[in-house]
Image (tube, protein in one colour):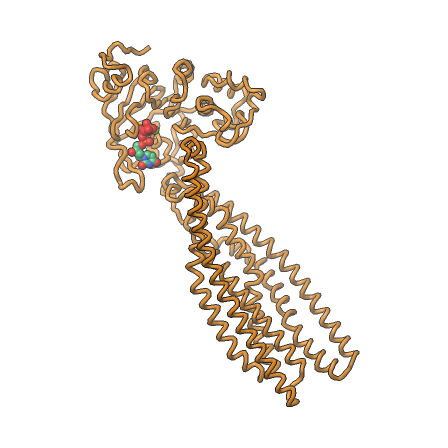
Length: 582
Ligand code: DUT
Ligand code: MG
């Protein structure tokens, strides 16, 4: 919970101001019953109207004073807790942004969302409560005890019995409650996870008519959440009335004992009234304390979950002084003995002993069966992940020394799964380069064969895309994704299977424009179709995490068995020699 220190340091002054007002408020509450007992015992009993009026006036003033303190406390408390919540959310978001893929993948996405929203809100509520009831309840409880004992020692005997019993009940409640509240939180996570998965896969769910299955799954987590919540409410349903009952017994005892002593003329009625008043204050204070505890449990569980994110150390380190050389043409990439394994995948390496050099301006095709490690290979270049062993150099600099942000400035990537953002088409293309002019954007779109369909829309480049670009076809999305990368004018361009949804004619057009664009740009092109890569300067053939062949189309046909197999599977059994690069 170290992350809280920063906010404590920042807000403790205002926090204390709020606590000060709460103390005034509690003081006002504590004075009331005593004044009332005076009114009854002196004013009413002796029929002195002037005394009643005078004390009544004081009572009114104290109430007003308490109300003003309460308002001030409310204002300060909301201010502090809202500020705190906003800052915590912003910091958490920034932290999530700064984490590497490996760090992020340790969490479920659904849980990251709940951490950022629900968990922060819980902690924020707790902080708010801290400045209100949390301080007030113990103050009232102890204050009432003292006032009651001072008022009448004899009646206080009842407290001697009632308070320990209630104390034990509250403690028991807390002890049993903690684990159950943690369970509720977990169940809520489950509900969020199922909803998220359903929503992100809604098309597939409908296509496979799996709605019933999904509904079942949801229902299960929903019921689980219900059960856990009911368990908690049951607990409260038992404890709260028991506490109430105990205190009420105490009040009956006070009335009985008091009336007995009044009859003996050893005590006045006003004392009984005031005493009962103090007892109810103690009762409510205790009840709020147990409620407060529930809040505390939730906040603690939430704070732990937030802390888990803050505690993620970004393993990606770099040397701030390291720079990529400014000279052009840049874009040379060297892989030297690179091996790589994803975390948690039983350490099974997905890339083994990769040695590869891509020269500036070279176009390198990467081909291989699915799961052979093509995407993994290119994801190492922008430092999405760090290699487990070996070294990757860009323009001669080991990328482990480079700030990923600087490195990624030189790289544009078209990911295998097209991701667009809600906003206009133009905004999406600007992602490639904030400062790109409209002309550059249209140029890139033309190269990616996207311009013609974009201007076909009534609103052209201003057309709004839904979330993830839902209102576009798969091929349209791919072309926008390519255009976005081209807008960046990178040294290194990575195209991960980005023409899979395009027809061959469009693909050929894009390849033609790329050839012009790519002079001087190092291109890594991953493809499934031989025709997409066969005119590359060199082709890398991957199989099961290893490079099994590097060379031109013709060379590989002679030397690489895997390449020949891929060719045969795509062009038929006859000798693939007739397949020539264009
Ligand atoms: N893998 C993981 N975690 C990931 C991504 C991949 O464990 O986040 C594994 C799956 C596979 C291997 O790494 O066994 C290689 O995956 P990659 O995505 O690199 O394969 P590909 O060559 O790009 O396959 P495809 O042609 O299907 O895109
Ligand atoms: Mg892939």
